[in-house]
Amino acid sequence: MAKMKLKIDEASMERIRKVSRAGGYSSPEEFVLHVIQRELDSLAPEQGESEEEIRKKMEGLGYIE
Figure 1: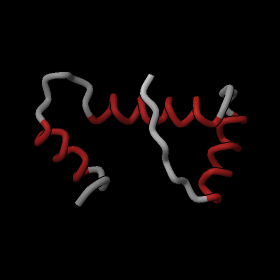
Figure 2: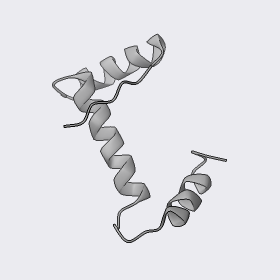
Figure 3: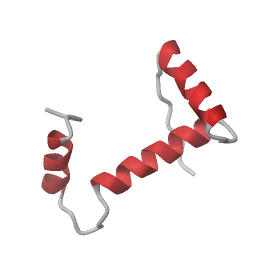
Figure 4: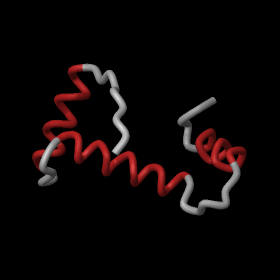
């Protein structure tokens, strides 16, 4: 498995800890990975989508300008 480091402010990290505990996740990392996977599936559910199609979806959702 590849590793990536993310900088998360303390307020957000505390929310992640709280939600992950309440949701029954084994760790905050497991919760974050699940959320990222779910978002990726919603943005690019099909392997055949082009980067331009994905970019348009992300712009429509307000993730990028």
